[in-house]
Image 1: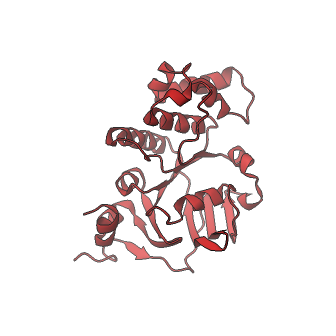
Image 2: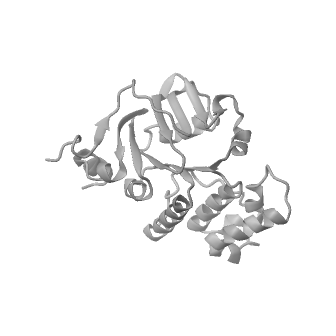
Image 3: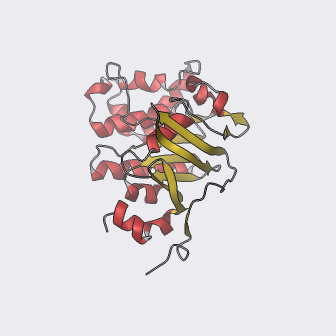
Length: 254
């Protein structure tokens, strides 16, 4: 049997710390006395695509929300470049070059597709430059351009996911954070999401992807972390984790 050492996969210890563009050290989240995230640490370097996989309830989404200031957290260090994110309000995270695609899309169903996109640029003055950014989103997602005047609540689940990604890109982020983008999508649409993520990677954007879909994560990222019960228990190159016997059994069903 192939060993974890041979695959360059190793189990995490609390003392392992590294620095990166996004640096998270000893992040903890508690809900009413219940520990959802138990002191995780990881990094996302510039231009790197990082994945976090785990079962439902592993603490993945809570970790993202804590990083973005959407839930209460305790953390030893939380920085993005030279910015201390622990002192930045959630609504201002976008101003520091971080875009967010939330779990469940959270688009504004009563507004048109185009108005949803414009809201992604709420920190900017809406002008001709903003219009060009909207047109660039239509180039990435032609279906959104075809439906730009339609109420976003009338879109299919896959189209709404494209809209959520497009809205996040309107702020022209350097780091794009995606929370379960494949949720509820058909395999064909999951492939479309993968193609978009890989296109953004090719353009040099940093990616932090949280997913239950391990197959998508391994194909979209270069380094992955495995979360269980609020802790990071394994990490390694995506290609190595893909072939780890335990990961294959639990997360790929092989």
